[in-house]
Length: 127
Image (tube, rainbow, N blue to C red):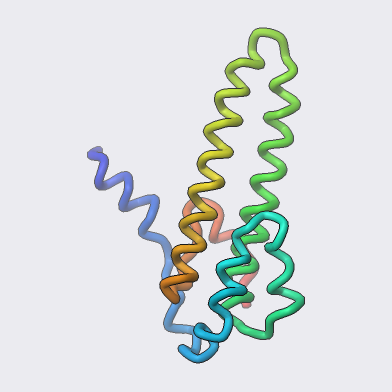
C-alpha cells in the first residue's frame, strides 16, 4: 500500500456540506471553528442556532471526549515503571493526532465544509 492511498483513506471522509444552507453556513462559521477548541466545544450547542455550527459542535464534542479519555488513561499508564516511557511516547503521538484533527476540523469549518473527522467523526450524533 502506498502513502497516497493511506492518506486518501484517512482524509476522504463523508462530506455532508450539501445538507446545509449557505446563509446558515456563513452565519455559523465562527461558532463552527470554535467547536474544535477543547474547552469551547459545547458553547455553539447552547449559543448558536446554526445547524452548520451544531454539526461541527457535535464533531468537536466527540473529539474532546475521545481525546480526554485516551489521554487520561495513557497518563495513568505512564506511571508504570520502565513501560511508562513507552506510554509517554504514545501519549505524545495521541496528543499530536488530536491537535491535527482539531486543525482539520477548523479548516473544514473555515472552508464551509461539513466533513466528518477521520476515525471518530462517524460517532457524532446526527442532527
